[in-house]
Each structure stands twice: as structure tokens, then as C-alpha cells.
Image 1 (cartoon, rainbow, N blue to C red):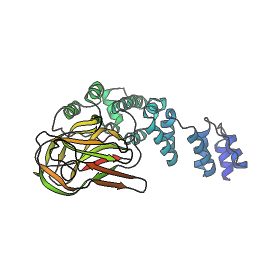
Image 2: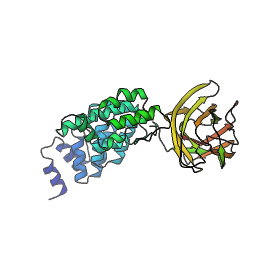
Image 3: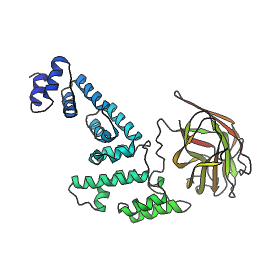
Image 4: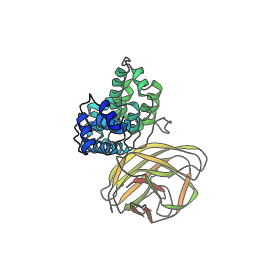
Length: 369
């Protein structure tokens, strides 16, 4: 039996039989919303790549935020990485519209986790949590389980650990997750402590911002050497900078203790220098291991930096004496095959705890271009 005869017999009762037969005879194709998925299935099954390409092209042209999750599930099922990538891009750009669509609660757990792992979703974490609660209720019904707190936690599995609770405000956490019944009492207490006390207890949730940005994370270091003993008495370390292109800063790299493993309390800020306007800040903490390495301290959301505008990077640390940088560079260039960012550093007027172009804290700026 030929492939053509198998194809016709296999699809005899399908609404898209004429489409497939016409294509195999004449290379003409007429695909509609009702037939595209079954046509794609058959094209994959019988290895008809040209018809498969037509189906993917049709789906791509009709991709919108309100059907992105449905098409992503199908793209993963049919192993169509190009279509899957386009669906993920659409979800990144219009996350709220995508998770509000009816098809969101129909996706499988693996697709849900693949989306929650992304750093590029453009949505508040509290709303993302609300969305996975809706998904868990639908999944309980699919599995014919009572919609209880325990079962919602059970069906969510790994997905719950992918919610970045530390990115929420304490008000968002208190109004939503803390009252949801999905987190254990111990998890709720630890997260409240994370929001309110220093040094902050460790929590098993990611605190990396969802950057809503493309590309890879970048980092520049303005010092060429590391020395010992930089003290803290409540005065902020500050350094001014400009950059030649638009970037988004997500955090700083800071030096840690010279006395072994230690926890620090820290407030980090970025201030637009001329307007004296604080663009972003975070009261947080970090743990260090006593080495001369830098340790990441992140903002809760990316901070947009405009080209050739002067900003002040500020860090106020509370803790023991630390390492510090020396032989500072006034100009630092970060260059890749696709982009070039040129940072210029300037000492900040006033008392900056000694930090300057030549020496001090705030060695690293972590950013996306």
C-alpha cells in the first residue's frame, strides 16, 4: 500500500481529507482553523515536510496572546521548536493576556513549568501565582480530585517552586500566597521573615528578577585588584556612572567579609543624579563565604538606564569589614558580537564611605542590553 493510499484511508472520516488529497495531487493547500492540527498530525506521521511547513506557517500567522498557550502545547507535542519559540516570545511580551486566556488552564504540567522557568515574563509575580492557582483547580478536576489545598499543592508539584515569591512585596504576599493554603505554615513564616528581618533566612525560591528582556545577562567589573579591610558605619558607598546605550540593570556584585562566612544586610539603590530621583531600590541581604569573590545582590525589577544620563549606584551595607577593589578603571567596555556597552565612572560628591573611581565597593554592575 502506498503512502498516499494509507494517508487517504487513515483520514477518511476527517474534515481535512480533501485538503490533504489536493496537496498530494497538486501541491495546492487550503488550511483552516478547524483542520490545521489534524493536517499537521498527518503531515508529521507520513513525513510530508512541505505540508507540515504550510501548517506551521498558518499557525504562526494566526498566533496571538489568547491562543499562545494552546499553540505552545501543540508545538511541543508535534516537536516544532520554531513555532514553540514564537509562542514563548508572544507569552513573554503579553504575559497577562496569555494567562488570562481560556486555553491557559488546559496546558500540561511540563508546559507550565517551561513557562515559569523563564526570566522574560512581563508580569507581577503575584498575578503569576494567581494564574497557577487557577490552573491547579482545573488540573484537580481533570484528575477527578477534590479541589482542596492539599490536592492543588500536589498537582502543582515542581511548578510551585518556580514562583519567585521573594520578588513580591510583603503586601502582595500577605494578600495572596500567605492566605492561599497552598504553602505550608513553615514556608509562609520563612517568607514573612525574608521580607521583614535582616539577616534574611534562606528560602527555597528564586529571587532573580524576571527581566522582560532578551539576550544574555552581562556583567562588568570596574576594579583590577582586590584588597582587604573595608569598614562600614552606616554611610552609603556610592559611585556615579554613565553608559552609552540603553540597558536594564538587575543588580550589583558586592564584596563580602574578610572574616569567613558572614551574612550582610544591604540596601541597594540606583538614583538619577541630576533629578535626585530614586529609580529602584531593594532592602535585602546576602551571604558570603569569606573569599575575595563578588556576591550578587539583585533588584526586584529591572531598572532602565538611558544612554549618556548620569546615575548613582548606591549600596549601604551593615556587617563586618570586607574586601574592596583597587586600581579602578574610569572606562569599562563590555563588547559582544551583537552589542557594545561603554561605562564611564565618576566619583560621587559628599561622603561615600571612601568609595571612588580608584577604590571601594560596588565593583560589579549586572545588566541586560
